[in-house]
Length: 272
Image 1 (cartoon, one colour):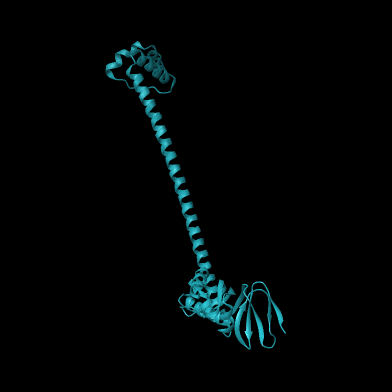
Image 2 (cartoon, rainbow, N blue to C red):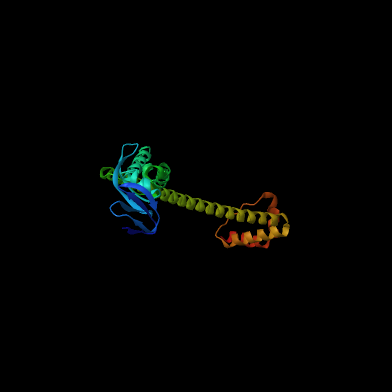
């Protein structure tokens, strides 16, 4: 009498006769002799596996918890089933060992910021486990590296101190910059005022020089009639004033009589 068994797709069937492996059968319908034979099914599909948190010590003796997720599939059903008591647990222990070795060569800050680098090194270290455990790790990823509570508290305090220090420096720099800008503005204002006053003084001096140059230029071209007219105007002003004494160059006294205004002036003087 024969029994039959169906091996599903993406599975391998291992036929055992009297408890000893005899042959492998692929997916499909297979017959076997009951009580003497049995068919074990081994899935060849990819499986996820999450390794629980476990402690890892860094190069600077910091204790961190590592959480790892990986995907694997069976590549050799015979080795997977018969040559290892628990191939999956053996693989997990191998992953933990390599991870401890990789992180153990790093300091805490480097390890926390290098998960991608650790993933690559860990995948290279594990390699193909077909010859050993009959399985292969397709993808491995470090989900989390978490420092211990005491280290996390110390890091938080350090981070807070760093932020306060940066804020204090930024505030001091801002105040210094404000003082610098205010001082510069005041200096610019003083320089602008001084320049304006200097320009005004120069303008007045230029105007006065122009007036003097104009007068001197006019006097250089003036004849005796101009000076006689100026004398007449001067004596006219003197005649209308309360003054009764004039001082005249002795060489010019004989010419005073030629000026009509002098007679009025002298007449006024005699009457006084």
